[in-house]
Length: 311
Image 1 (cartoon, rainbow, N blue to C red):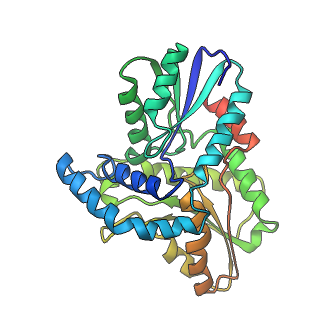
Image 2: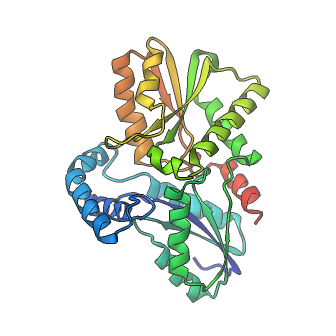
């Protein structure tokens, strides 16, 4: 990056593995995150994390093998960063991932070298959760050590330009919406995290209402519109309804999935939604099962970022 910048825009996300070693790194870092495993003892968290990683690594890697041995989040985010650097003349755009490279510490070093003092953090999570937004923002702030003037962009699921981009993606995925049941699929959370005050469920519900209203205003009629949650792990209670249970309602019907909690495609969209839940849909007897692509580096999302950040 050679352009002269007086400000930086840093995109925050969880990251994704490029190989099996990075998958181990991802899982280790994630389950050592105090916002994910909410036990008070760092030692106990570390012990639990080691157990989870050792038990899950091989099976998780088999999933990655089905999508080309790496998460799509990396090349797609790199493309988004490149597009934004072309868009902004005097703003340097970076990505900082929470659990795999490039880490916040690497970005901080480059910002210091360039003498940039003003930094805008844009979490690539439209709805707020302690497990995503809070974790990523705290991670960057700890790496920055008060070296910059930091502005954190608030949740933007209500932003008009952003939602117009989402609606366009939904409309462009199927020709006859009235033949499809639209399911907004959000990444699940343990119920205890929501009960402790996490606003994620509230934000997701509000977002579904906003998008449903826009579709209605535009005269786009789906057979039905609903919300469900994916990625449940373990025996504890998670947000409901679960996507696999929701799909059971639509035997002999058509279903369109929109991954409402994700902006960039990743293993949860390319494997879990597009392969794993597709297999469930086939067993149920759903006659057509489609998954919308995320916004990724869509031109309308670039415009939305301008509107959201006011840069």
